[in-house]
Amino acid sequence: MTDWAELLKTKRNFSTVSGFAKGSISGRAFYSAFEGTPSGGVVRNLLKTHGVDRARALASKALYRRTLT
Image (tube, rainbow, N blue to C red; front, side, top):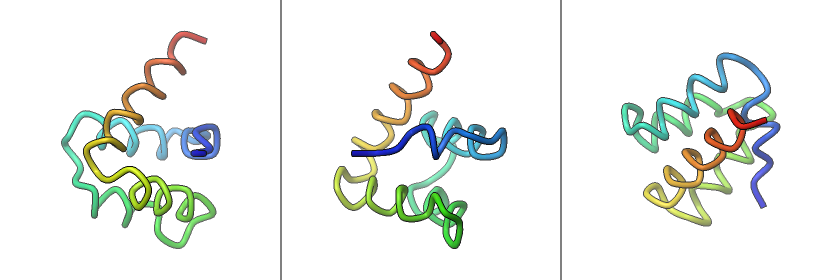
């Protein structure tokens, strides 16, 4: 299970996830942005488990749900 709260907790992370969800950041760039951070494992697991296309859809869904709250 992906910990979206961890991925979206800072403004920089939010903007990176947003760029990935919109398709302006590749899967590799998305992973590289979080590499070496506490969120790096979450991103790596997300991409490994779901692949880039499904991870993009899940990121978009998480962003949508976050804006509702």
